[in-house]
Image (tube, rainbow, N blue to C red; front, side, top):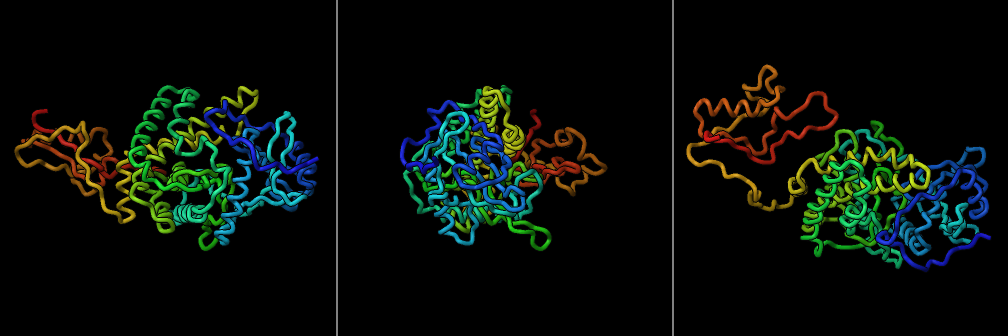
Length: 458
């Protein structure tokens, strides 16, 4: 007989879990669970998941949607899931204008059912409210208006969950950015490409070092933990066909963490879209900040946390594919997302974190933090006034397509030295025509964030 689980028992801790293979369920299994444990005669269609099993339930004729059957990974107990259920209800109550995929009550009024799966494992099952409108997933271009709207939703969620408490939040999740460095260290060996593996571990260590300097000053609270382009739903298209996010899905990663981690997760999910990158996500930062102002330590930690999130995504997907392969099956959902996640990592690391932090400060109107030259910087030669190379779009030396030639910058510097210059330097903050690209879907990195120079004693 179906029964409601007691919301007690041990909490999940990824550090002691060997892995989380996805529950093996067919659509027929899902339909049987829905009939026996939820009291619904329905048709099921798999929706895919990283570590759970999700199915869209419709009426047998397919004419009406009944909800989403969520079979939580058996590694998570009733108390873990009770926190998710309660967080969704809290969020919906705190922000009534925000659509939330809350759990629907079962035949006895309890939204959670503990069932035995065909594998013999026991798992918590819920029927979640279906929210129409579609997500922002995919790699298509997102306008600044849509990017800002996603940041606004993240800010609203952060404000609404600020006072949410539950004993189930004390679990330890691999998606909690407080543990990101450990996750990368623990799972990096699953990345088969040694070059990519080293880049991921190096980036994670550098990002973690920045976060550790300010960690004691980072506010903590309940966070959704996975507020991404995949986990929001949108309004119907308005003027110009624009769809804006106004609903929230899947609180499966809700936990107590750094509040700024909510925004870091949201930003990371934007980085695989066409034309995206650090400058393109600034509207989301500003919209979040308008709802829930960022403290100074949070601004410093924000982009390093984006880098850590990106690193966790890549190593976790490689691990999940290895786990599911060891069980004799694939995971099409994870495999399809892996290219996006590696693109997120590349975009997160495209600019130094300190540069992105400065961009965030400037965009939010916050005072700049002065910094000395890098420890490995070479002092420019003293003496005569330097010649400043003009590498802008108006530079005469770049006429006739010269800006397209490889090595143009070095050639112009050498020409200036041959003409008698004692010192040749580049300009800070200049948008260099030499760094642009033709017909690119991604905005090229053209603005100089430092100064280079070469002397006549080269």
